[in-house]
Amino acid sequence: MSRTKSGGQSRAEAVFETLRADLIEGRIGPGERLKLPALVERFGVSMTVVREALTRLAEQRMVIAAPNRGFSVIPLSVEDLEDLTRLRLRLETMALRDSIERGELSWETSVVAAHHALDRTPYVNDTGGLNVAWMCAHRNFHHALGSGCGSPRLIELVGNLRDSAELYRAWARSIAHDYERDVRAEHDGIVRAALAHDADRASAALHGHIERTTLTLLRHAADQTPADAVKSPDRR
Amino acid sequence: MSRTKSGGQSRAEAVFETLRADLIEGRIGPGERLKLPALVERFGVSMTVVREALTRLAEQRMVIAAPNRGFSVIPLSVEDLEDLTRLRLRLETMALRDSIERGELSWETSVVAAHHALDRTPYVNDTGGLNVAWMCAHRNFHHALGSGCGSPRLIELVGNLRDSAELYRAWARSIAHDYERDVRAEHDGIVRAALAHDADRASAALHGHIERTTLTLLRHAADQTPADAVKSPDRR
DNA sequence: ATCGCAGAGTTTATCGATAGTCTCCTTGGA
DNA sequence: TCCAAGGAGACTATCGATAAACTCTGCGAT
Image 1 (cartoon, chains in turn cyan, purple, brown, red):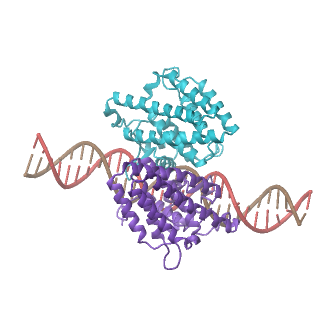
Image 2: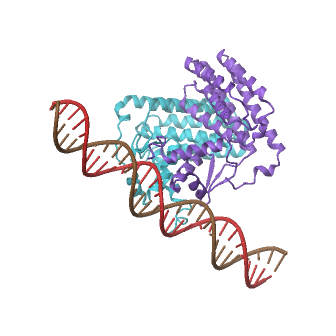
Image 3: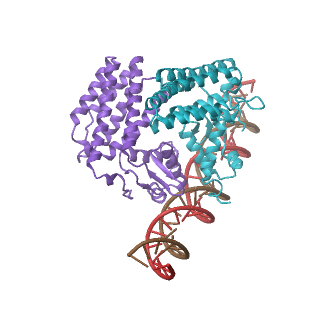
């Protein structure tokens, strides 16, 4: 029953990962306060542990730490989404180009594998909502695309940006339906160009793919009442 | 005497910043163990506070956290330095280019100011060692160069990479003497090109500047006994 | 002489409690 | 009616203590 038995990781690590997944998969909304007592009860650990998890998330800029006022999830912001997307466009295509130029077999293999897994995972779940497994497979797919670039730091960095972007995607889940087929075709196009070692075409395809997602999100955000992005529901 | 009075920040924040400065300015060596009890005594705070600071540094990859074995400073590695430099070359010139293209007056002003400050700060201190004030001014200068790019995320990201690189510089401080004049000239060249809005020339100059620093470090590292990079002095 | 195991000492991870802050609501006065 | 001071309640930041894990050393067996 000891900590070691329950997964080989520290309690803080477990809480960190759970919270991180909650954020990425949209189970906690933007701007929401993260109150220590509630989390302590939820996870059955002491405040110290929750604090460590939140501190780490704050360092990753997924939550914000306000001195003497605790933690809250990073708020939505159109400007940040645009900034984030610009950066992702540059860095993610950079990693893809590098991967293609190096063209290692193990990289190609992992791309094919991730693409296959993604292709076979349904986009929406039974209840019509965004499928968490799809989000995960999608993330793995994008990760695989850049994983052959040979730079651990670039890989990690791109991964962090992608996770931040994932927050925005999750929070606008209602976009789920309207372009499933496009997305599939886009993924196919990226993979085909990548396997053909056509760096220009592949990165153009990836560029378009990322940009289109953000544009959809922005359009979606514009439709909603803007107040929605500001108010904090304050419930977990 | 309360926490608020002593600087307007939390204890954890203060410890974090002090340790961070110690790392960047080379007062703590690579690979060194960071034992909780010693730090607790040094800062006169409780373990919780030290842990928070270390956790944040770990999230920034300046220290590494080994489960049940505490924290230690990130170890030196030639591969990492090379990886880091490649990334810096790409991202720092990217930020500079963007800044030049936007060409805001406030950016130009801050570049001129930072350059002036750097120019007037001696490279070595009285005892012949690397001057901490110069390191700070140098960092500010590089920060200023990219500060007009318009992307908060890119600025932060480049800053983090630069700080990581600073670790390597600090740990090889003996290179202090041999090329002071070159460095001055390089800075001048970057600034001149930047103020002339010549993005190509400016980023080429910055590229050479960063690359040359790393090459010097690598040459320096090769001279030393490689064992030096591995053993951990185990003293603070 | 080497290997492995047991125990002491050291260090880390976690807890429960406390002191310090902030927020919001109430109350009294202009 | 509106504003300000004051206080209750809620929450955070920090502490000291405890339990768990690791490391190192010495001893005995092969």
